[in-house]
Length: 388
Image 1 (cartoon, rainbow, N blue to C red):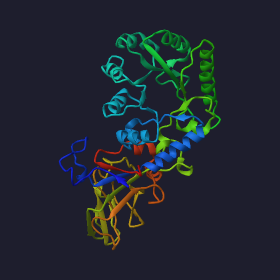
Image 2 (cartoon, rainbow, N blue to C red):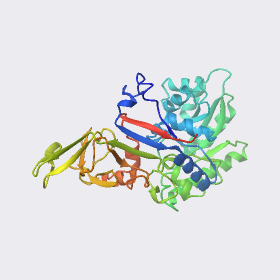
Image 3 (cartoon, rainbow, N blue to C red):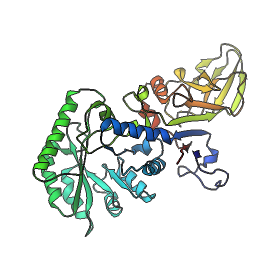
């Protein structure tokens, strides 16, 4: 069945973004929840660990609040997001499970809000420990993960300071040490020496902690690529993100993973143009003969597409080239005689309902699929296919 908002009964209720009612949106992202469930199971089987799905960046464009609700229904105990703001949003919208995040402003109000909402926090700087400790309300324990930098040189406690940080947290009754984590720099490459070094450092720290009686329940370093490319089965959990949605810097299109999202719009106008007529800004496409064209209400304001001259859509089962430059709100394609006003148009699908996927969009735009899928505009209506 299709889960979507009841458009007729809720005309006065508007989308949370920019107050555009769903009924007035001419672009639809249809998201197949069964594909997401399939991918979570595939990742769990590959990693041989439990799974903590990462739903950052609005669940990679698929809808944070909705995806969280669905994956909780299949028993997902832990969810991760990048920012504390995302975690707070989830909790305030009714998610009662464990939520971990690791980006925050040490001087902002969000840390206090997170403590009041019983969120897990990954501390990424050992210098933050005294300040965070002072913020923790009386008779409260903060569920704490320590984020260790093993070599990617982004946020993370410097490796040489990690052991002491764990000792400080474990000895303080205001902290409940629930996890240790790190992140791999090159996991998309198999048998990479940097990854092997990072894994060695992480395991060494874990084993050293065990010798002094510090055993964090959740130990995780593997994101999507590492679940497939490295043996991480000795850790307690993995935290894949993009692969849950079938996309990534690695090309997952030839794996067992499925693409949940299909993006469609419709024809809003059909017209005839004559030989020599130009189309769009700069009139970069000149009609070689009299031809029929279709105008679609979608553009780079809705999804990042760079290479207009190489872009295509699918209408009534056939591939149609984009003519001229893609505008912010419109694009023009070649129309067949059988095309009609209102006909459905596929920008991309799952490879079965439409041959073109997000990987194709990314390829002719010279982008990664992640760059496209995480920049879907607010004018896109999302609907969810689920049997639950």
